[in-house]
Image (cartoon, rainbow, N blue to C red):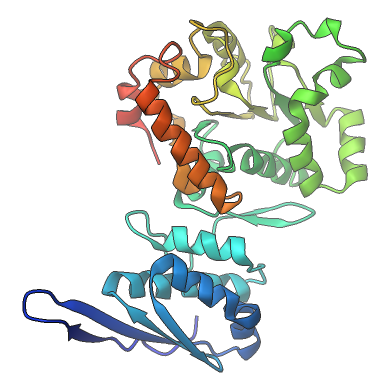
Length: 354
C-alpha cells in the first residue's frame, strides 16, 4: 500500500510526578476515491476509530493525522492500513468492518494489515472479523476435523457454512451435510408433521439463513432437491460413512457423549467436518454430560484435530450482544451455572489452539 512514512513525535505533558505521553502519526492515501470510502460518510469511520481506540484524528483531503498514546496510535494506523488494503482488493468497508479492523489491530493477537482471510461464495465475499475467526478459517482449510466453541454471535456456524459453500462450488467436495440435534423433540422427529426435511427444518433455520445469504435462492432449492445439500438429523446419522462431503454439526453442546462419538466416527475419505457449539447454552436434561464437553476433553491431545475457542471479544453481531454475553458469563461464573454439565476443562484449555 502506498503511503507516506509515519511521522511520530513524543510529547510529555503534566507535572514531574505524572506525565502523559502523546504521539502523532500521519497517513497519506494515494487514491482519493478510496480515501473517501475509508473515512466514511461524514467521516463516520474515523469517528468510530476515535471512540474505539481513544485517539484524536484530523482528516484533510486524502491525509489523516492521528494523535494519542503510542500504542493507541499504532493500533489506529494498523486498522486504517487494514481497511485501506481491503478497499484496494475491492472489498466492502462499512461500520462492522471498521469494528473488525479494531479487533484485528489490537494486541496480543495483532494481525498484519495486509493479511485478510476471505471466503468466496456466489453471493458475497466474506472476510474474517477477529483473530479467532482468522484462526478458524485457516484451521478449516488445513484440518479435516475442527471444533469451534464459544458464545453466540461469534460466526462459528456462519463461517463454517461459508467454507462449505466455497468448497462445494469449487468442486473440492461433492455435497454439504448439515446436522443439528433436535433436543426439544427428544430426537423423536416422527411425531412432527411433514417429511424428514420438514420435520428438522425448524432446528436448522439458522443454517438455511446462512445458505440463502451465500447462494441464490434457486440454487439452494435445486441443490437441496438433488442431494448436494443434505439435511441429516443427528438421530439418523448412525451407520453412515460420509465421504467427499463437508459435514457441519451445529449446536453440538446439546449432543450426548454417545451421539458425539457416533457422529465423529462418520467421517469418511475426502471429507471435512466442523463441529460448533456453545457450552454456556446446554439444553440437555440436568445431569446429562454434554457430548461437546466430552469430546473436547477426550480429543484434546489428538493430532490433526484443531480446537478454536471463541469469546465475547469475537462477537460480530450488534455491539450490545458482546456486552450481553460478557454480563451473562460473569453471572454464570458467580452462580456456577452449568456445573452439572461440565467437568474440569483444564486439559482442553491447556491444549487449545488458536
